[in-house]
Image (cartoon, rainbow, N blue to C red; front, side):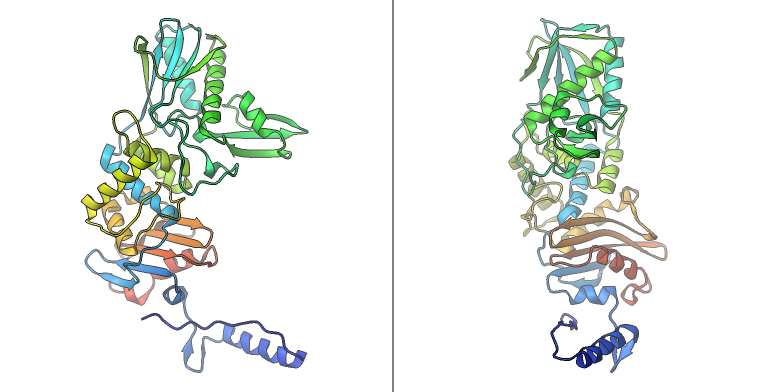
Length: 416
């Protein structure tokens, strides 16, 4: 049974005197800890009173708080916890993603994308050094093979904004398919010393106001073109001669593998950063890789793979997984299911960031319009207790943080 909620409705009154009396009454309610025997509700009690919400806390043996534990709600970015767990169980924390480089008979340098989500500018510097070390000095052109995902990936819930969190996902990508730009008096340059400016980035930067901007690369085809431009510039900066022509497609069977680049980032580091910065690109990149079958991956295959894994791992029946980042409002999970995930993530607690000003909370937030979620662990004594808060109605942005902080002192968790 839900707690009763007291709400105040602002209405117009015919006189200032009446309005003043009402204001005095409201102030009295705010400053008095008790009025007519009714205590002012704390954050946890306020959360329990919400209509479209669930709050669940466990000690690993039983539920200490069980408010709508089986109600299916939109998890938003707490969905990344499931993606993280599935990736860890598939590949292990020490796994490193690979990108392969080939030389064709015509001297073209082919790059076969393996879905490395952290192929950033600094990694390409290492690639150039490695290619020089194996004797590559001149290439007739570039070949880009991004066929693992293709360039037309449609992610449920992804919008058409130019914000980094709406970046397209491709198997061959640099800097998370974003560009960091500096605009001054209409001139567009790179805002990162390690990243050369490209024709694609300059085109996308036109019309932006003065200052620094980080934008996404719009779509898969544009992102792939930008990758080729950055790689070419890096090769030239390293002293290699590079022909003008760029091809897209599959690596020719006759091409010779000359270098396999293993990311400097382990999966553990990738996941930790993904959870801390809530990087949608990384989450859906991993999601797609989890669905890879015979050298191809799609959102449909990833959805099927993830739902099958969840049924086999947890025995779930009612739920829906549409993307790995939590962008889709079609994702549906219950608080009890989220606790299943957290219990399995317990050995990897250090992957979750501590809440600002609350070292006793380690958790992941989730935010969509009208959706505010938070899932992770709160510490009571020596124990870390898993909790899930899913609110599918408008609330203040920081409310979930207040609830988690209050849980560390709440009477329902006393003795743990």
